[in-house]
Length: 421
Image (cartoon, rainbow, N blue to C red; front, side, top):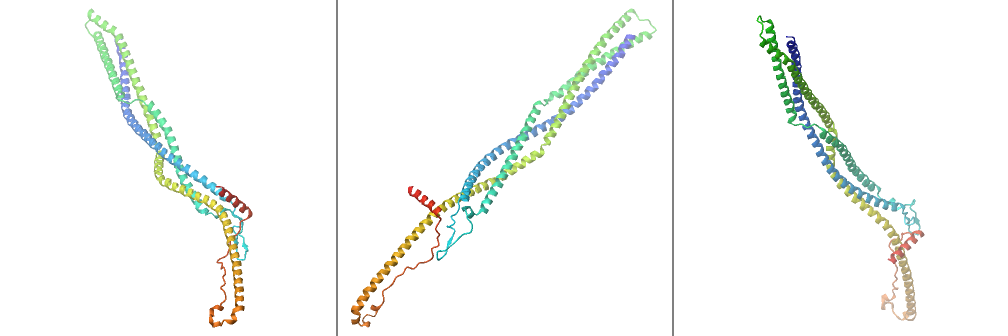
């Protein structure tokens, strides 16, 4: 009776613990199902967001390649024409205008000096040149700033993408086995607890039988006592089986609890990771804005190309201006020489005309002394007309000044070079 009672009491405690473990396991299983659904949902969203970021990153890299190539070519062209312009301007700044050339020769041979010493650069329209440089620099700065910001965003998202891949690689695998695991474990626990309940019922029946014999008025037979003693001996075996079953139930409950903790931790990490992705929204919005800005840069590229061409044409014009100044000094010398030749011809022609007129007057005087007294005036009225006289009439005035000796030496050297060619 004592063994049966203690066995039954112990079995009840073991079964109670098993029931508690079963209830706890059911709670773990229910939580696993809830967390699994949430985890599946947020994991899908994470993959969608990561895929979106990767797509934007591919587009950004492609767009950056286009922008960088176009910007690099345009910067190269701008640098080339700017260098050419700088060289042309440097030459114009260093080329002093001959002070004599700027003098205005007045009638009578006097010259009016031009105030100050000038260089060829002083005769340029700086306003247009500054406008071209300012506009080209503004457009190039806009192109460069957009390209630079796109590079920064690509670097930022590349770093994030590496972290994304690390998370996805280490994330737990989500499939139907997660749910089937909990369900299978629950079925196993239910099987053990059912067996334990049956053992408990068996112990209770045995206890009732022993109690019944003790309270009965009839003395039990030896055979009945033998059966009761045999059943009582089995109590310890049943207790051991109940303890083993409880250990299995506890182990299963612990295993499901560990799995629940695992999924809960994964869910919390996924939520935190998803929030990190959501925190990228400002940068993603900015990336889209940079895409839009990049689309509007086509006009800047076209206009800057036109400005580069205009700066190049202007540099060519400045180079030709420098060369033309040198040609002008040569032309001034040529014109002075031509003027000198013309003056010589005028002088020679005037002297010849005077000499011819003197000879004519002499011949007429000799004729008149010999024949006029015999010839009536009305015989040939025009015969008494004086000889025609000719004079050279000069139109305009010679105001072209003579360059300085230094300029003349340069001109002579240049003429020798041209003759050598």
